[in-house]
Image (cartoon, rainbow, N blue to C red; front, side, top):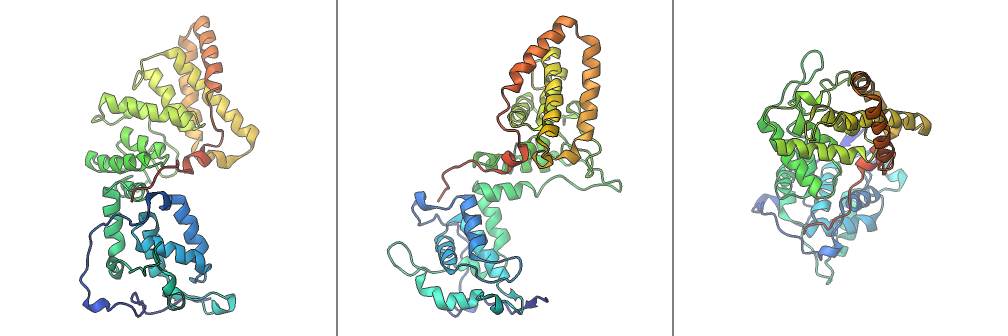
Length: 356
């Protein structure tokens, strides 16, 4: 099938876009806060309402009515999806009608009178949607206002930085990293479990836990960026420990290093050894579960290698009593693992009350 471009029409016969005055004000939603869409609710509603991957048509008119009602009343989590529909509606497959799908333009002609507020008052599309470049503007503004979905997206704008000819990451500037950290912190406050991305930018000049795109070389904690304050170094290890409690191999490694080198934690070789053994235990658990999707297994060989180096060093320096103490410590650490599917856990978003 060939996608045919159709001339974009953002007016749908209701507004003269040529003679309007643009208004880029960010308004609070007029929907009661308890009825605002959560991030995941908005995404599910969008996919139920509109096919943006094949036919570019309306799947469920009732769902689309609901989505547009939210978008036109400044429900931030719905607005970006509505804009996506405006961008997609001009594309279609020739056999869309054979699939029983109406176009968005047809939908608007048929269902426009259902776009009303809770009191039955007809809604008006915010004028900002008439600007074909509004997406970047709105998303940046929403991020600055700490709406978590948009803050999470903007956190990726600044890092990791470019790579060299060997696919190794080049250092980011501290300014870039701090901007990324700022927006990931906004996202974290809004329910995103972006600890891994956040700690990478806090700790390393490359803005990543690895030195290269192919995950062959891992950054070591001793290479932390020199502008990092002791307070933020400790905070990064606190976040790594949260990751570790949900079976993150990177999280376990960072806590191991923290105790080994006394970075973000008091230096304690016994605890370092216990955490390194926890990494071995997690590795065995990975094999037992036979679920490679629970971890990014292709990223792990350099972690196993580095952890083995740490263990060898500690075995040579610890006394039998210290090793025994480490085993006792390990037994306690095993009980602290909350979830054995790290990737599933990190993709979830904590429930929170959306801002109007």
